[in-house]
Image (tube, rainbow, N blue to C red):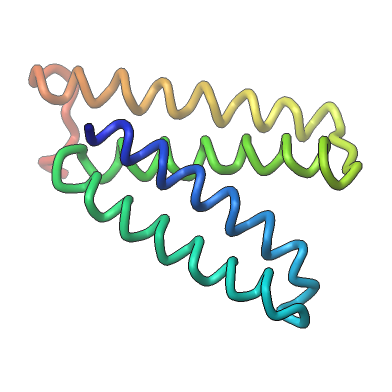
Length: 117
């Protein structure tokens, strides 16, 4: 259930960020209201997820998935262009999230934990 909530939080954040672009600096009322509501829903859902998923894992997935999705939205709906460096950054973001998730499993097993620093 908590993974469904995380996906819903990501979707709400992507919608809110897309509406932020459409709001033209909060000069258009409906997209502006949608932006605020979308972020409120996203943060609320993320707060529910944090009851079950460690902060580092939940936030990394939420932020990275939102970043990648917004890059795709920008290309598809707003005719934005991505450079090779930006595409590499998106790929590195995905790899970083995978590493955080793998590390979370290792930390839970007590392998390479750094929490004593």
